[in-house]
Length: 552
Image (cartoon, rainbow, N blue to C red; front, side):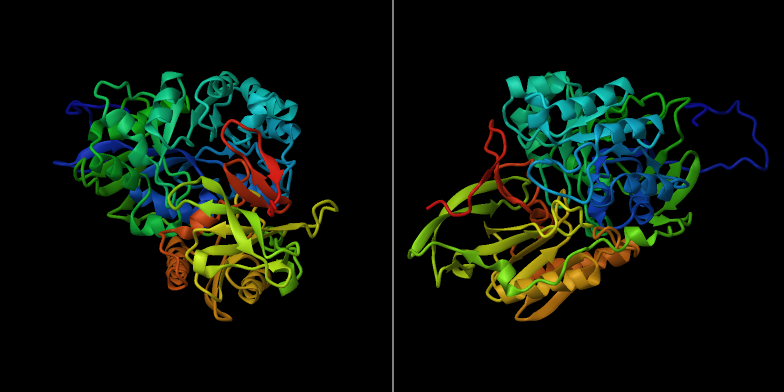
C-alpha cells in the first residue's frame, strides 16, 4: 500500500530499502477497465494478464459470460481458480444473462437466479455482469428482476447494457432498477442523458466497436461538463490489438488525440472507474492507504509506460513482463466442447416458393458498430432455392447449435442472408466465437466452401477459419471452450492477424471484421440477428421477436 505521498526526507532507510529513481517522469495510478471480456482476446486469463500489465492495466472487471455460455457455472469456478495468484487485480463480474434471451436462442448452459445467489454467497463474483436483457428489466420479467434483486441484496454494483435509444421512460426504468453503468451508447446525446441521470458512461473503444470518437464529444464540445460519470473501457479487444497497439493505454492516447484534457482522460480510467466500482478507498489514486498500483510514464500525451508496479512490486518494464506467469492446466471437459456432426451442402439449402423472385430480410452489417440493420432485398429464386449473390454482396449465413446435447436444442439450426461482408465467389468464413451463445456461425458465398469451413472447425475443436476455392487460407484453433487459445498472447495475435489477412484476401475491406461478424448472433442488439432458432428482429422501442426470412 501507499504509505506517504510528498516529501519523504524524514523517512529512515537502510541497505534493504529499495529506491526507484523516477526523476523527470510522471507517476499515475494503475489503469482500471470496468467492463471487458477476457475471452474476446482469444487467450486465457493468464496469457491476457501478461499482455495487458505492461500496458498499465492493473485492474480488470471481466464479465465472463462468453465461456459461461459454453461451460456454465463450472466456467466461473475455473476462471477464478486460474487467476488466483496473478498480480493483475481480477474483479469478476457474475454473468447474469446466460443465454442472453433464453426464449430465442440456446447455449451450452443456463444461469439461474439460484446460481447467481450462490455465486455471491460463495465469493465467486465481485460485481454483477452486464444485464443485457434490458427489455426484461423494463417490462418486468420475473426471472430478470429476481437476479437483479440478488445483486442488490448482496451489495453488488450492477452493470448495464442498454442498447436502446429510448432515453426517456425506458432508460429511467432501467436505472431505477439498480443499473449503475452502461457501455452500449454510441452517441454523445446518449452519453449526456446517462450521465445526467447518474449512470456511469463506459465509453467503448475496442478492436471493432470504436464508439469513443463519437462519445467523447459530449465532453470536448461542451466545456464545463462534469466528467465524474465518464469512464473508458475496452469491452472487446483481440490479442492482435493488445500486441500491436495496447490496451487501456491505447484508449487513453486516443482520447487525448481527440482533444480531451490528459488529466481528465486519466481520471476516466482511474479514479472515476474506481468510484463506479465503489472501490476508491482501495484503487484509482496515488494517495495514502491505497494499493500501490503505480505507473511510471514518460509524458501524458504519448503515454509510454516505462514501469508498472502492482501492490508495490514491479511486474513490467519497457513493455515486457519481468515477473513470470506460469500456464494453467485445464481439464479435458473445458477443451472438448464441439458436439456437432459433420455438415453437408444440404445443411445450407434455403428453399424458396415457386416464383422468379422473393422479398427477403437481410442482416446488413455496419463495420465499426455493434448494431446491424434489418433491410429487405428482392432475391432471385433458382431451382426452388435462394443462393448467395456475390455481385450484390449478399452472403448466406448459418447458425448451428454446437454444445453438449441437452435433449431440447440438439441439431437446431437456422439460415439467413447477410450483406456487407465483401466476400468474393467461392469463399466462406466460420467461427465458434459467436456472441453470446457461441454456436457455430458460418458465412459464405458458396455452399461447398461453407461446408469446408464448418467441418474444419468441427474437426479442430473450434476457432476461426477462412476458406477460398476449396482450400483453407487460415485457421486459428481455439480449443478452450471453442473461444480461447492455449498459446501466448503473441502467438495468438499472429494467428488473429493471419485470419484478418485472409479475410482481406477474400474481399473483406474492413479491419477486425471477425469481431463484427461475431455479433451476428447477439439477439439482444438491434436490428436483425441470427440465432440457432431463427431470425430475431428488435427495432428501437420494441420487444425482440422472430421474423421470417422470406416475406413474399
